[in-house]
Amino acid sequence: MLKFLVKGLLRDRHRSLFPILIVASGVMLTVLIHCWISGVLGEIVDTSAAFSTGHVKIMSRAYAENIGQIPNDLALTGVTALVEKLRAEYPDMIWVQRIQFGGLLDAPDENGETSAQGAVMGMAVNLFDKNSGESERLNIEKSLVRGRLPQHPGEILISDEFAKKLTVQAGDRVTLISSTMYGGMAMQNFTIKGTVSFGVLAMDRSAMIIDITDAQIALDMQDAAGEILGFFKDKVYSEQKAKNIVAGFNAGFKKSDDEFAPLMKRLAEQNGLDSMLSYISSLIGTFIIIFVLAMSIVLWNAGLIGGLRRYGEVGLRLAIGENKGHVYTSMILESVFIGLLGSVIGTALGLAISYYMQIVGLDISDMMKDVTMMIPSVLRANVTAQAYYIGFLPGLFSTVLGTALAGIGIYRRNTASLFKELEV
Image 1: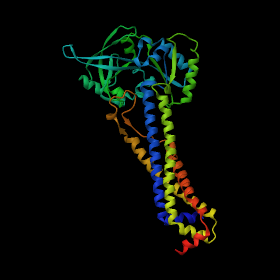
Image 2: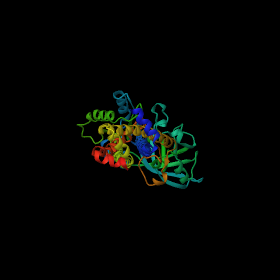
Image 3: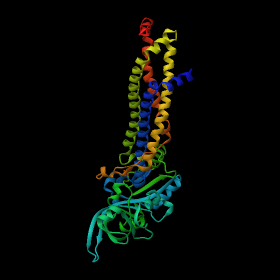
Image 4: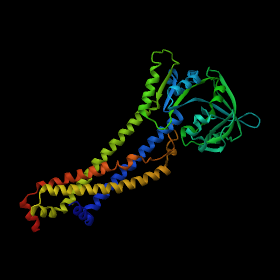
């Protein structure tokens, strides 16, 4: 019987073409938007983790309360011993020290007088230790526009956009003017060895990348760091693992009243990412439900229209003695075939477009000139394993639901009206 129904659908395009196109279009949009949201969410999480939050971050309690001010006067001290302890207790994670700081970068002319100045957002990382993985994590080498990477103390990188603003280039000397950990004025000369463009507008406006040892000397922060970041060795953020690590670490300092006691936070607790992640996850679920309902209504209407054209066929089948339940079941089986074929076509099209958007991406830099969050300027889709089957949910369910609603009219038919229709 199934073979007979499939042949009938393939030979009568009026019964199959329009519903298949509707299903394919809906499934394609479902797959595309799922991949797009997954890609954007993944980009935001990965970028925030690499540049700002880590998978977990340790700060002093006072620093955490005023983190928006980057208060290095409230930084952690004795960080070398603390990092060694963390590596022993959590060997499945990579622990790195970082210092965030602000200040002015002064570019002198040939006479040593100020030629240009600009507010700088500095990040001190371990550039010279390859085991730290900081260069790869921040994608510094691939982000290099001009010059080379720092290889010796006193060498720095700045963003290419910032370099153009100050009219400086690789090889020029600049002076950092900032404040020390103890509130004094810090002035230190550095040599620009290269310029970078990370594709993250918050960094590309005025970033300065410096080795953490140089920063500790310049800011009078010996054996101190504002933040200690932890990353899972498989590079994949796990919310449950992060919760367990945070709970275990913070339990050891729960009874301490010291405002400089270390406090660990997971990625989702920082920069409002928790609410954003929850919102996007619920958005994906809501989107699929809306698509199922919308496609069901469209297919229901398509079924009603098709049913009007098939009144004669249905009436004849009932008149010759075919059971109403059998007719209804055959229509459901037809809808399953249409749903499967439409879902396969729609999934293939959605994956093809998503893969293209994963490679090329969408440049939104013009829309984010005033954005300070760690969001990449080029957003890309991400073809996940779920994308291969997620479209079948609305594709199959809505088709069957639409046919089920439209086919209810079969049970309302009566024999008296059948002969009238057949005479016409």
